Length: 347
Image (cartoon, helix red, strand yellow):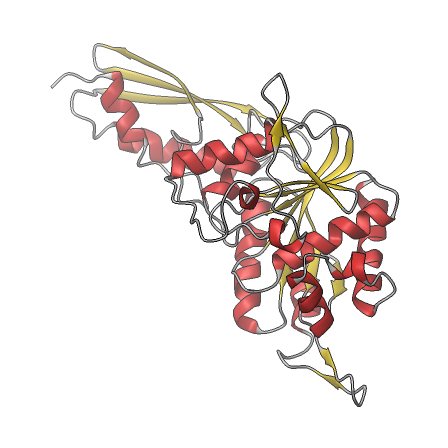
């Protein structure tokens, strides 16, 4: 059987990028395939500062190619580039979004830790520091930013076919929630999800912004990998709760960003404690000290501890995040502290 470029490319799909379930072909690392009398030469392009990564890829790719019918010799050449600041490890094409100074991803290893609440209030707190801010809801399957900001307005488009973001509380917003009815599920396959994510980031008329906050879906799936592969991020913030089951997943999220050379700006411990409105007594409902210990283990700052607060939940359900509705509250003050720290750190 003769070796063909199609068979070689298909075989290379079995070679995973170290630390990920995604392969080097779908990451766009394969730049050329040459075949001559059964001798195969594959050219890869890779952006990483970790010497172990290209070594591992080369060894696995060459071993895989030797098992392809018709291949008598296999050679993998890797062109290694230093990644730009904030760009993903596989993100040779990771670039800045026009008009935006800093893109900050808000992530979590699991759902239910209040990541979208944190993203929404953090964006408002950044606006209170006189920054120009937008927020992009990258959770295509489970969008919630439209609900949290209390608007179902439909986006319009410019003559150049760019989406005009919704404006609320002095922020520019984009979410799949603006495109769906309340009960309509986003039933999309992987390639469509990637396409929508890119449209929300690249085809929205964001204008000039100091910060674009990305509310990522929970976990470490295709949307996260698409973003770190194509967008130069200033950094990522990991949201967790104090209990160990959430911290385990926070570690996974942090490890993902480390592997793709995106700096983790810090950890935010949400639902950190509860203050009884009657007695003023503090209750550590989900345990205590977990966020602080994990931040030390990851060697990143503990940016803040957000209390479990009834008014925060109520204001979010009303479509007015607590940082906007009650700017002098304990919760709003904590978000403002985090925002000022980010401005000092990121610029």
